[in-house]
Amino acid sequence: MVIGKVAGTITSSSNCIHISGGRYLLVNKCNQKGEIKNEFMVALDLVSAGFDELVMVAESTSARETPVTANKAIDAIIVGIIDVIDENDQVVYKK
Amino acid sequence: MILARVTGTVVSSQKASQMEGLKLLLLEKIDPVSMQGKNDFIVAMDGVGAGVDEIVFYVSGSSARMAETTKGLPTDATVVAIVDLIELKGTLTYQKR
Image (cartoon, rainbow over all chains, first blue to last red; front, side):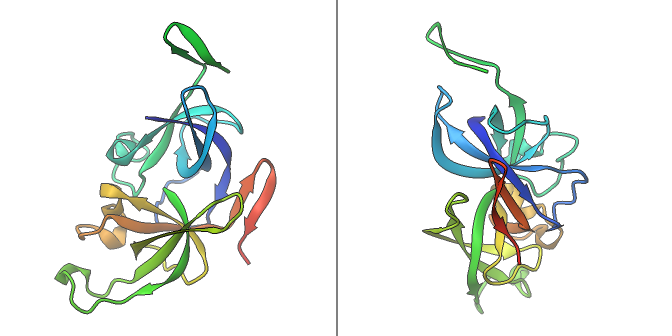
């Protein structure tokens, strides 16, 4: 999974993904400390992540391994909201 | 999924036989803050009927074969959605006309 920060929302009325109630968020990729890299991606939100929260994004085939996204044209989903990142026994990020 | 602007279409007469009748789009990846192109282009199959100058997002890898129009086709990029609105920090950076 990659680490990213929720930067905004994307609305699309015309799509062929067919996930009812699907919410697409714009995610800015981050380093392990939660510092943004200004590389953006669109991901389906499964965990009700909010603006500016640090999240984990599962990409590629793994994004289809949930009941909601099975066999759908989806290659990135938000699978978790990050509370704490610990690097070498030091807390480098805390929500 | 990656945000991009449709900048044109791609025509190929000699191609894999399964691909006949499908529209190929030329996409330029964009930066959602400035909405400017990044001069990074990709050819994608069209799953939604997107037109030139529309902002879309596309799926890549094996997921590109999961749209109804691209089942079993040799593609690794498919446009799956036309974007209506992009909202960053509570302000609209893009609204489809």
